Image 1 (cartoon, rainbow, N blue to C red):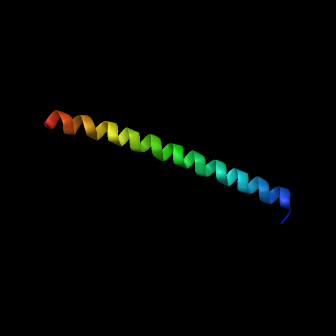
Image 2 (tube, one colour):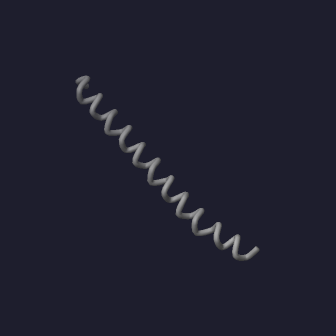
Image 3 (tube, rainbow, N blue to C red):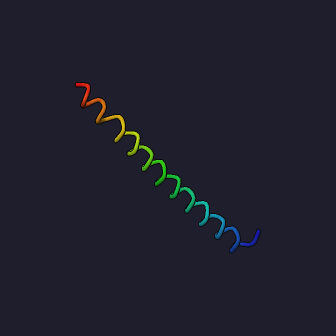
Length: 43
């Protein structure tokens, strides 16, 4: 496999990992934002 293609694939993979991490962070904040006010309002 040529080096440029391998580097481009690795760079794209790293970009996908960063995007996935960002999406998971947003989802975690969204879920936390949904649950925390309910817990506070119950107590």
